[in-house]
Length: 156
Image 1 (cartoon, rainbow, N blue to C red):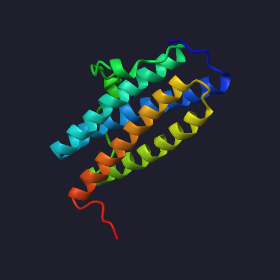
Image 2: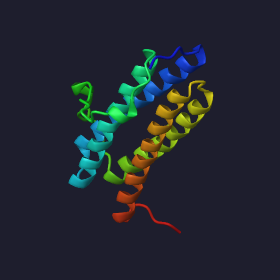
Image 3: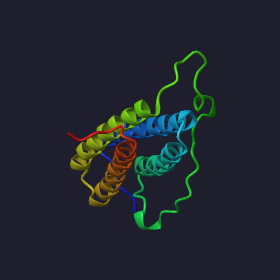
């Protein structure tokens, strides 16, 4: 299904595109730095889903509403390999700090999708953005649950 985007919709999608690319890079970099194998896998899984989000945003930017029922689940991460390893001389980040950063990132991105959803005219495009937002919330939940299980997130 094709759509014509307004200038505002296009600008919102360009923002989401840069957010998704940043998430892919952060998750991939953090997966390479994580000390815990469970956290490494969580970050890699989230990076893979972020790539699907980026593909969906790119489809919308190209004027095509992606079919959410026909997801292939076969997304190759398009991450610059030179950015996937820590830079020389940079301090190692703890697993807890990586989790805190990604949880904060997911909260922010979920909010930007919320705004975008309300700005789109096309119901099908809104459904795609809503689907992505729900997955962003699931990423946040998975990080929260990991942190809670490791004593990194204490409820008062």
